[in-house]
Image (cartoon, helix red, strand yellow):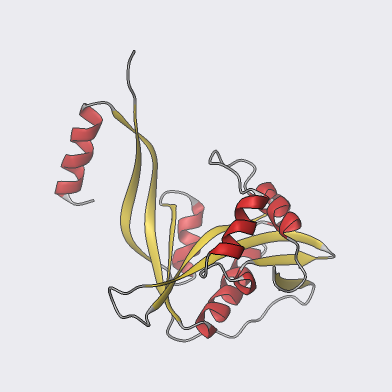
Length: 192
């Protein structure tokens, strides 16, 4: 954290803001897509090819059942897919074992006109696996497949926010993501 950022954070804390969450902004430049190698028992499917929104949301909620943020809603995902050009159904992925969704990842493709009108980037949201399937390569397979699909969409860079102190940070760094900056979420506490 830069001195100016620390000063601002200290000032805001002094006037009543409290730190709610600290995350890091990470990015991955897509230069060469690595070939996929995975257990044939795991199938990677998208919402556009056989996964229902209801099943996707149910699995996503189960993967994030301990997360204190607001859970994904079916109507929310339906609306994103219908109204947002960037939420491509083929880039909302699920890992499936024996007809059961064991992990999910969502993404949104954006055009970044600051760089170039044709420069496409993407954001990753909701990468997670059901608790009993964690640390078995599910998330790695989802990121690998998503990277391949995003590359075919002309995406040059992928962004995400994630916990900077937990084990997920090392996962993303191992996958090639680079820590760009810290992000501090603050809430204002008003004494009545």
